[in-house]
Image (cartoon, rainbow, N blue to C red; front, side, top):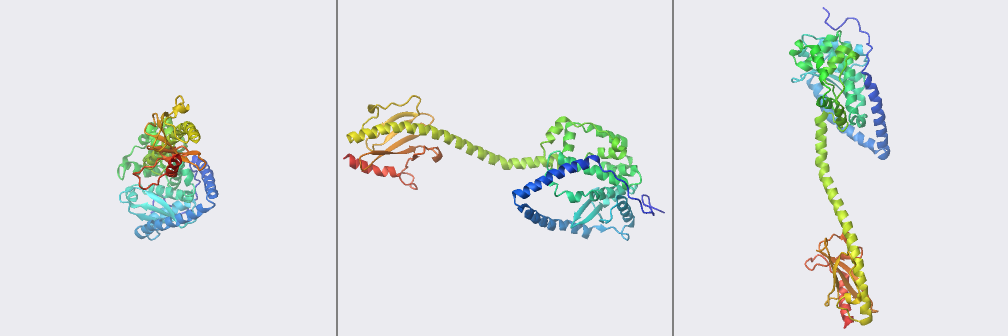
Length: 445
């Protein structure tokens, strides 16, 4: 007796109409990714392709283990090995129009109800998990849906395009929309491989209700659940996912283009537009954001701290430079007095110097022992002091070296000033200006 869903006559290739939005989304993604690869090629002078070759070779070695695992542990389905499944597979390949059949394997799923298609070195593989075969013993025709769905990924070249579409696939909303569109398209391939729509619904019902309960699933009630997917959380988690909600997939199988779904929450669109496609939905995006936060937060804090320090140093430099300029007025008066009288005055006020209004300078004093001029400062620099140290030239002229005491960054010093010498700091040499004081005192004698 002929098995349900197979035929002794070679089936005609079916006219399969993929989901309409897939083509449009593919064109958009192809343009974005193509321009991205072109820009990356120009920016890196082609080095990116050397990097891609290295990554390809690394991935090749890594993925070879998985393919070897499938081929070494799975059961290859042939005309001699599980001929019933081979007949179904051959039937679906002819329906879809694949000239070169992929290798077909059956593997234990350890409870997983699914099938998948993959590619390695230009060779395609379709793997059917045994758990789904066992679950559909009461409707073996439904297995055609799984086989056809995976063959659809091959026919639509999803396994070829995915690597170079990577840039566009990360884009929020766009990448996940394209992925969901591919699933809708492959469902049409699965439907074309089944002899009746009900078996296709049963195939998805197993994913929804499990190995046994699918038999009593109320399809219309399940489809009605799609009307509850317009809420914020339902919408966000679908817009950031690679797969549509299963109830929507069943609705499209059952009702085709007549299936109508509610509009998603507008705020869900807004939030989803900020979430890149990681392949793991909203949770994956949150993990990425947390990871980036842990990396970028310390960097941002450090950068902000450096910015604040730089800004504070710039402000301090301006304020100290103004005080230094005003102090040099007093120093020049002292220098002129010394050149005329050959001795230092006791106070600068006697020379006619007055501290300008709103000046940072609090007071000006002359040290009778060192002949240095000390500029005491007002807040917020009351912990600092500008020291003007004299040195005498052979012609009797006086020049002044500037140093600043207190805690101050080098970047915050006036351009003609240096940090004051601290005798407790044995790692630093005394400024050159202080070594010339002896020459001045010798001259004063």
